[in-house]
Length: 379
Image 1 (cartoon, rainbow, N blue to C red):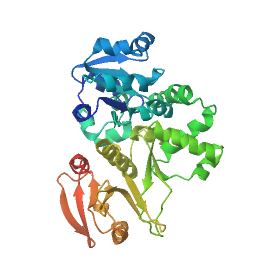
Image 2 (cartoon, helix red, strand yellow; image 1 turned 90 degrees about the vertical axis):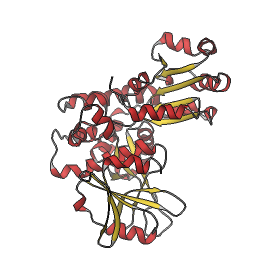
Image 3 (tube, one colour; image 1 turned 180 degrees about the vertical axis):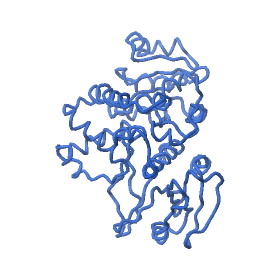
Image 4 (spheres, one colour; image 1 turned 30 degrees about the vertical axis):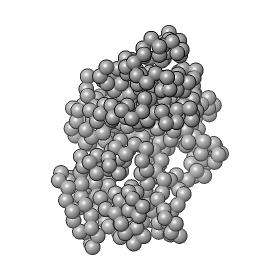
């Protein structure tokens, strides 16, 4: 079994502070395998009817009494929040890892009854460290195939596997949990978000392309975000009249599905910029989890890829450059006139050792992908 040491460490740390851990992630991201890798955990698959019947009653907790329990696909239970609340309140020697589809229905079932009782971890597609553990050391391969373990470990780009995943996502996550009727328009939005990954999201524009109402496309978008298929990055703004304040940027959840939607079976030089930006976003999401990642843009089109708020008046800026020599600091200059405090990070694939520099009068710090956790894991 391939170890994902960062994630197992994060799980163990989380369980020290609260009795319940909700582990979420898209289908086939490796939640089940990861849970089975946690030392001492007893595993229960709630997709199995007999298991659902067993774990739905308090007698199950009485029989277990102590130890670490995994309830996989917990959203299959009629009232998962109830059994988890009972465990947290009345069985202090029991720790539970609960996994399942990241859906609005699941969130409703978890509701306010678990406030203060659970931590949440989002399992992202494979980080760079994960990829290396899987034996994939070429970042270009990770970009092309994506970070879901079964896809990352395939020898070649098999478009049929990605299409099957999308079909499964519709039938098992969407149709089963949300009961949407218009498959064609919903899947059209999925394909557009993947194909146009990194675009600013204009609901009116997408409603026209999907041939549904603006209200419907916003509802679809909320579902995509909640189920983890779309990564929505909201603008950072301090009230300046020249800043974009409401329109988010939307990324497809994984580079492999982005390249699939674009019809790419190989990568060319011009492809690396967008995909590198997505790789960096994936790394940031893995280490920052629920802490905020934003982007900044003004109405003249100057844009900073990502920003991370630190202290009250301190904001770090992040530019993603496949080649560090391609950095243009115009947007950073304008951004720093509004927000002078913070570090300007430039994350590039061709930087192996962090180093400060000054480019056209702007102080920056060049870092590589392996430096992200040490810097932003403490954000």
